Every structure is written in C-alpha cells, then in structure tokens.
Image 1 (spheres, one colour):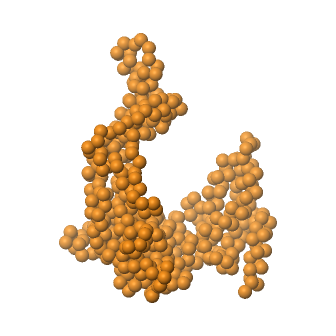
Image 2 (cartoon, one colour):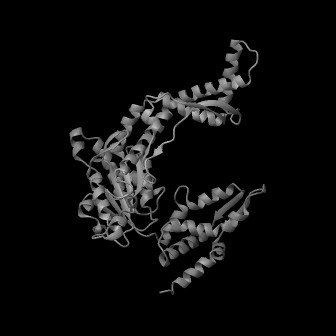
Image 3 (cartoon, rainbow, N blue to C red):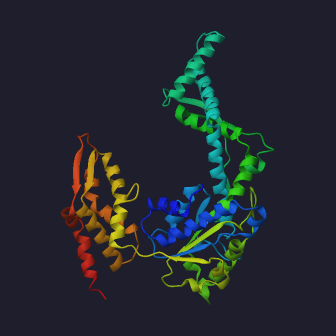
Length: 436
C-alpha cells in the first residue's frame, strides 16, 4: 500500500491516542520499505531497515502501534516475548523459532488471499457435492433428466441457505494431528505435510449441518485449486521483505554481569543478535533471510535501561522512542475518539439485552480522572486501567440486564452515577495518598 508517513499516522490515529513520536518513527520505517522497493535490485541489497526500540510503561500502545501498522499494509506480523527464549544449551525456545513463526504467519496471509481468489469456483464445487448427498437422501424414482434438474434446484437452495440447518453425512479429509516435539517448545511436525506425497489421503464420514459441511468442503476444494509451491514462494518473499517482528519485554533480558538464575539473559541477547543483524534461518517452507525484516523491540525499562543491553544489540536498534504515560486528557480521548472506543463497545454489548447505554461528558471526565489518578497512586498499567474501571462501573447494569424481552430501556451514565458506583475505588485511592 502506497501511503505517505502522514497518511500512515492519520490511519494509526483512528485507533491509538497520542504517542506521536512513536507513530512518526514507525511511519517513516514503513515508508522507507516502499521507497526501497522502488530502487534497483543492486541498491536494495545495500539498504536495510532501521530497527526501533520503544520504551514506555505497559498499556500505553507499544504493541498496538506495531500491530495496527502491520494490519494497515497486510504485512506478516508476529509478537514474541523475549523472556520465552533461552540461550542455546538451556531448555526452552530457541530464538530462530521467531522467524519460523513469521513464516507460518506469511503462509497463512498468502493462503487466505489465494483462497479468496478461488472461493467462487470452490464454493460451486462444494455446493454441487452437497446437492448430490441431499438428492440421495431424498431419493425416489426419477429419470436422469429429472434428477439433474432436481440437483440444480438443490444447488440454488443450498446457495440461498435454505438447508443450512439440515444434518447430512459426508466424506471429508482426515487430517493427522501434528506431533509436538517437546512439551512447551512450540515445535511440531505435521505428518500430513511430511508423508503427504507418498501416502494416499484418508477420508472419514462425518455428520454435519449443511453450513458446516459447506465450509469444510470449500476449504478442501480451495486447497486443490491453489498452487502450494507458489504460495510458499510468495510467503517467503513477503516474510523477508515485508515481515515485522515485535519483540516485547526486551528489558527483562537486559542487565550486565548477571549470575545464578539470570545467567542466560545476556546469552539470549547474543542469540538474538545474528537474527537482527541478518542471517538465514531454515524453515519447512524454505530458507528465510532476516536481513530486511523490520524488528521493533519494546519494554518498560523501569529497573534496567536501554544502555544495559549489550552494545552490539543496541547498535542494531538505532531508533529509540519513548512513549509517555497517559494523562487524564488522553483517557478522555481514548473513551470517545477511536473507532470502536471502549464506551461504544459496552453500549453495543448491552444493546443485545435491549439497553440503550449513553455516557454524559461529565461521566467521561470523571472516569478519565479516576483512571489517571489510580495509575499515579498505584501501578501504572496505562489504558488497561480503563477496562478495570469500566467493568466495576457497569457491573450492576450488566448483571441485571438480560433474560427478558422488554422494549428498549434507556440508561444514562452521568457524573453522579460514576461517583456513587466508584465510591470504593475513590476512597481507597484517597487512603493510598497517605501510605508511605
């Protein structure tokens, strides 16, 4: 997608409040990818992404910025926790598995796109198969011509959804379950992909509704129509050139001269280093070069500092941005401005039970003030604090709603309602001010 940095920031602003510095940094990094793709192959080899470290407390939007960025351009994206990896020689996940996970994500993305392209043909074949099964169930003495006409009428009815709830028995592919190599490692072998070329495909009979059967058969037929080699090649290309790996909790593996239980921390940094610098990792879809993958690292860095990372790793993350703690004004904006804001989410949920929930500006201000104050006087968990406060605030309404067919009931949450229902939180917050 050909978007300018300003357009990228504008798109991110629809979902994430504040943190302009971080948005600007990722927008430039993304645009530079497009600029690189427009250059000659010789020059492309020389230009590598400028990786980013995001520093800031939890819940301020670090992960969300990276995730929305990837979604914006349909890039393969994975989020990994640095603490899950261990140095070579210790029990745990090896750092190369993050690249293999990215490959899986790229395969899934490309496969979804290719499935969309062949969905019309796959659906037609699946509906014809189901029509034959239904025709057998409704079998009587018909001539061949009448049978064909009857099946065509069934196909039309299946397409219209008239038989969605009807239970039929069909033969579907029996997929072998992947074998996990070692518990918790995340590595598994799919026997179907290993021996698929040598062993005949097994099928089994299952009783399913027409809707479920149609979904299964469409997926099966789409697989037959898609060229798996082309999918693999395109997925590897995308993972190498468009992939984004978000390494969270990187501050937890920082620290110099660790001993005892933390002895492998610096080892993990040294293992991550070649991945970020650029190397080739073998995956079951083929080798992937990591030279042009964009790495975004993030951490709160409360105890440790970015400077505590080994110098070589710091050098591979030349761009450092600091995300700020959320203020009362930020909370007001989070509650009202983004598409599908928290208040609109709760209103939509309760509308299912015929409750028309509205919030006055005074109530929004009060919720924001209480959330910001609690973050200041206890743990700062950023925007996640709003979920805690909103659940507590709407507990009575959520509990009493449902189980009736009454007409729509309007419920207005105003400043007085907020004060009454959050009284305990406010009282505890006031007491905390005097606890040393």
